[in-house]
Amino acid sequence: MRPLTVIANWKMNGSLASNASWVKSVCRGMEQGMPAGRKYAVCVPSPYLAQCGQLIEDYSPAFLSLGAQDVSMYAAGAYTGEVAAAMLKELGCSFVIVGHSERRQYHRETDEHVAEKALQVLDNGMTPVICVGESADERNSGREVEVVRGQISKQVAVLQDRLADCLIAYEPIWAIGTGKVASADLAQDMHRAIRLQLAEFDEDVASHVGILYGGSVKPDNAVELFAMPDIDGGLIGGASLNPQDFLAICQA
Ligand code: PGA
Image 1 (cartoon, protein in one colour):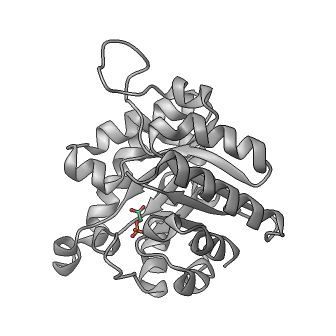
Image 2: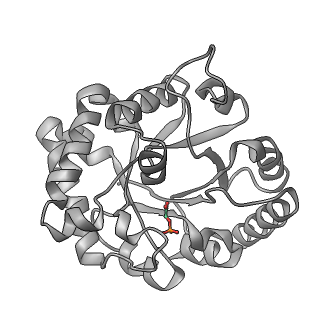
């Protein structure tokens, strides 16, 4: 059985003071009891990794893991401004988001970059959370499955069997930060399509890989989404900024 994984993505939000109160509230809430067999993580901006790692360690390392939102595709060297996977590992990260649509859109990341980043994450003993998803135009013109298949096939080509150690996050771009959540059936259809595509490569990989849904997940739609057979959890943006909402989603 694939564990349900719920990951907060703070994006470019936070401050030393608000981070401290978020981690405290979430860890205290989790100590009250969480459903068994689930994984939880928070992906924070790089400058806050050390702070949040220490806070998590102080409060409740058993429940919450630390994650990053991006990583360099290079191991080390003259790449000003970049952060290497080994550095994220050293700071205690377990998860690293790669290929978020905001990186693809604003920083021109391609599927090839995303796959190289995922390799760096795997080589450093962490779990890449590989984001895929179609735009509104692509869905409106009926090309959503083709687009997502294209994104996945590049990952399969590079990562091969190592995909079994990755998470995939299906995040339709039209649902991110818009409040327009994909219906549970629509999301399930795409998750199923992704799993079938992975099974064309290797059935074992397909059955192991966790596929998370992301895009306007809130406490009131998480239960229905997470109940779907091919939805193995969520990547939560806006709603994760509020500790009570994030806890409610974790319990869904
Ligand atoms: P959202 O973002 O929950 O604010 O829609 C999700 C994401 O981009 O990971």
